[in-house]
Length: 149
Image 1 (cartoon, rainbow, N blue to C red):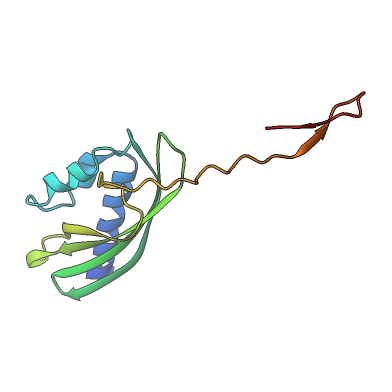
Image 2 (image 1 turned 30 degrees about the horizontal axis):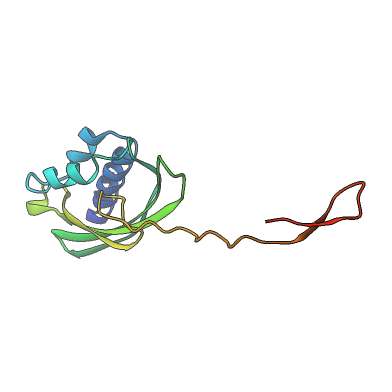
């Protein structure tokens, strides 16, 4: 059997970590983080499964910057349990493979889309209420025209 390429190992690690986190397996997901990044990783996902429901995770791109460093762009489709509105957020994850000991997430940042996936403050968008519409109506059995408010 041939040797597995570094990019395939990274793809496997990133897929396993992001899918485990999506389905609430933070213990499995956290194994793919460095010791220094683990507390932040877990803190940012503390609302997942409670306030936030992650509907889909997609690894959009993967770039090896050298033998020990890589960047992975991940796209999330999610909703807040309280509102049912579909949100989309993309992140850039930074990975390391020191001494080829295994790929680990070192940090991540939101690259675009909606705020709120990681507990950050979000702006609530709403549609302003429409002004009342007034129109004429007729009462059945009468020829009187009534204006409604």
